View 1 (cartoon, rainbow, N blue to C red):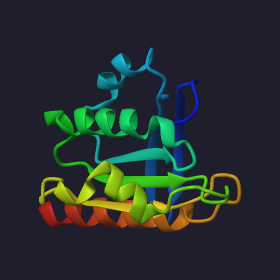
View 2: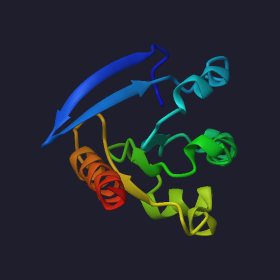
View 3: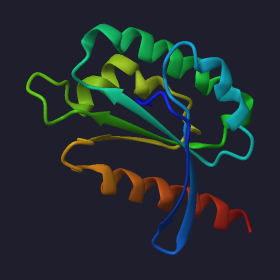
Amino acid sequence: MICNVELDLVLGFGRYTLNIWDVGGQRTIRSYWRNYFEQTDGLVWVVDSSDLRRLDDCKMELDNLLKEERLSGASLLILANKQDIKGALTPAEIAKVLNLESMDKTRHWKIVGCSAYTGEGLLEGFDWLVQDVASRIYMLD
């Protein structure tokens, strides 16, 4: 996540209501992430595709996060952000750096290239996330 302010947002998306928390990605904030794991159905991981220096740290933090038992059933949407910036890695390149293909085969995940600046890719990503979560939840009922 990009910003350093906790954001609590309730958003209508189609016929669904999303409760969204942006908990920030700075190192000093990461210890608080655990407060938000309970009953999490979907996880959005935002990667700065133009910041090659931080990708190793990004991979390590994502790996650690996905070890959390309370997130084991959560769908994972990776947003490869800043696709509008020249030199940004493509979603396929980000997937390779993050080693997504080796992820547990039971984990539902998708990587989408996007630009928070232009809005490109955001609807595609959230549409997948909502549909994936809904299909799992309603399948259990």
